[in-house]
Image (cartoon, rainbow, N blue to C red; front, side, top):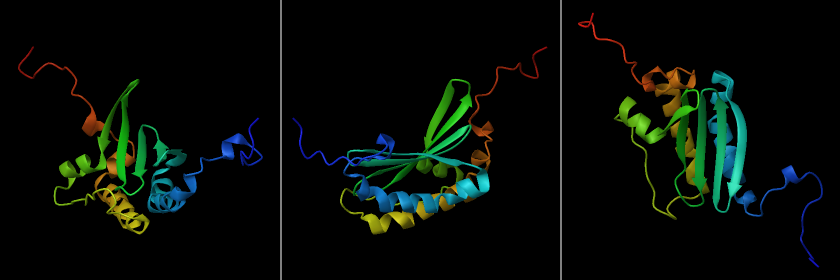
Length: 158
């Protein structure tokens, strides 16, 4: 017989793993930093998931899904999942995107244990600002920069 399970009563969907409260400040900071996605670009915060020492906050506006990943004591990172065609897509990190769109912009990388909860908000704000300034087309759903060129005939072909 199991004793002392300490499960809260109510809807199972509202229960979170015991480690989840550790991520509450990160989730709050993430939602605040990326609120502009909702306000300006009609994204929706569709999911916050926890797994062990990892947390993911997901924003969606078809054809773009933006995921903010965080592992305790590590630097958070952002991935864009771009649905470029039915059943096809492309993933690109914010770091890689900014290398092509704004090479002068750099993001700090921290080793394990060098970053604490108080350090994540400035990084999230920097990520959000970079997206807002240098990726408006993507956030508006224009993925033409990621489309494969069609196999059209060359001008010399007749």
